[in-house]
Image 1 (tube, rainbow, N blue to C red):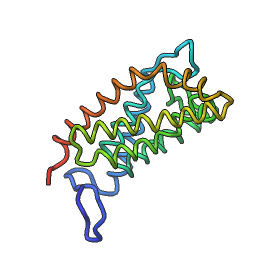
Image 2 (spheres, one colour):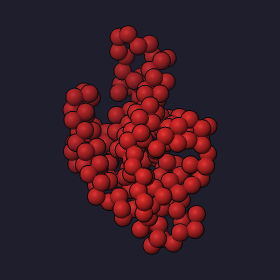
Image 3 (tube, rainbow, N blue to C red):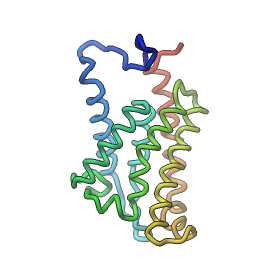
Image 4 (cartoon, rainbow, N blue to C red):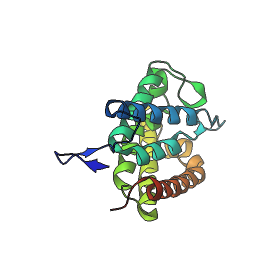
Length: 191
């Protein structure tokens, strides 16, 4: 990212895409990537929370688009889903999904994307791994909080919403870190 004359970050200029269309395009693309990843979901019989690739997509979108566009993409994604578009896991949508057992995970997406973007800036593998781990932890914290709001004890919420997902989320965290590290090396100029 380049600094403009006021010292704030701005998207670098690329030929063929005018500046007014870059942010909406990035935000829309980020929301679409998360919506597509939600299609790769499996319902599990022992928990109301499905297994999906949404969280991996959130980590990558935040890391690649940055805090503003990454969180904007997540807000767009959540807004579309809340309005009924079938963008959530298993092709569902509606405000009830945000208020149900998996709503806390979804509502944590903008915060997780922002955290990943802030930590993984100019990331080497260690920074990207830390960013992905923090993002994953924030998503799980949101999910646990929602399950507890819905009446589960902490122990039961952990058994339903965290423990069954630990191994696959650890794998997704490592995959996200590796992709973000490779992307930082290829897509971002080094100072």
